[in-house]
Image 1 (cartoon, one colour):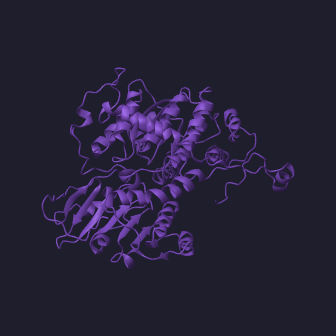
Image 2 (cartoon, helix red, strand yellow):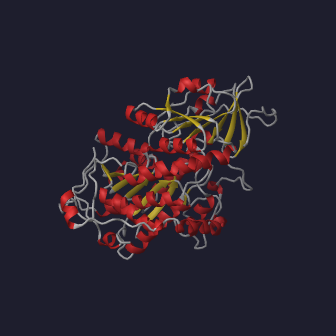
Image 3 (cartoon, helix red, strand yellow):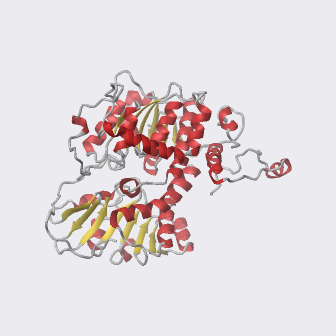
Length: 509
């Protein structure tokens, strides 16, 4: 249930820290059938976690000069610590340069670090995290460290880790357990190495997908009860939190960052509007003009994907279950269809629903030759990839994260990232947008960690509106943007505080 922030001075309301107020001023063609050389039949099924989230097995990993599993290596950083597991610690210098570049496009997070590190609002916080490990995440982790927190980290996606960034973090003293191309067993091993540490009890969780929360809840129930707060970023993870809450099993307060305005509108909409094209171009070299595309789901992610593809000249169809989102799609000029109606004719199928089995084996069997299939939702359950692991189908690795799945009659589909998140698995996402999300996550951690007893009960909460507005305001100077200020008379007329919040919680942006 959504918790309202009433802006009063009551102890149950969010109170703006002094440091927050202080800064408020401021082509490849695929129609030709390939030769049969090098085809491999992969009939191994994909095992999944009990709740169908990001816990998937990898059939391939990227090629490397060193194929030794990081788990079998004995590595130490320059300080002699071996409390990490990355691909190659020697890549640290390269990763450090990537982190420094990312810092330039993350103004709010850097400002938060500068303004709040004197106060150390996270002193004593022991944060265990499970997110995409990218240069942008590294900036977030180092900000949390600067604010006083101890952090241990694993990856929420077996393909999205930047090995050089993980190495740079390990070199800096962060216990990081992640590398690109983990197996399913590796995935859970890394999470357990973050959590199961002698003499170290986490008191905060930062999760993206819910796997870390699920692991601690199932494997370490006593540890879970001592957690002070959970911050969850994805729709999949939030859904699992609400399930726990509804069943009366959520024994700690949790912050739903996914449904905050700054996450929904910027990370989900604007980020996907740019990264969908990047992911498709890098993997397929295709031209979008004139291509027929069906986008499954017209939430914020779907809206971003549709807008980008339409702008590139694609003919875009939309599938939806929600009549309100469906009407929005129609008003935006998209043809609303059922997937079965267009599956034989479309060139690209994109899922972004957060659901499971949106694209089934029946759909895959009916697709045209060289149809591209990919997923932009967090969970890997939207496309029934497991149904393709059968002896009669041949899998052919074309390039990193690109597979041809070939039927006995020669028809093939182009499957990207084995049905996992396309943009973070196959390309990158705009750093500036991630600055918005990361700042939101950091503020949510600070709020939950410092909240007096009784402010938050054992439930799932939305980010206070004032925090959303604060995060947005931190990014405006990048555009040399100047906010209009209410006069006293105008504020009184509207019944608002001149410093916000400016919209009620039920307002739809």
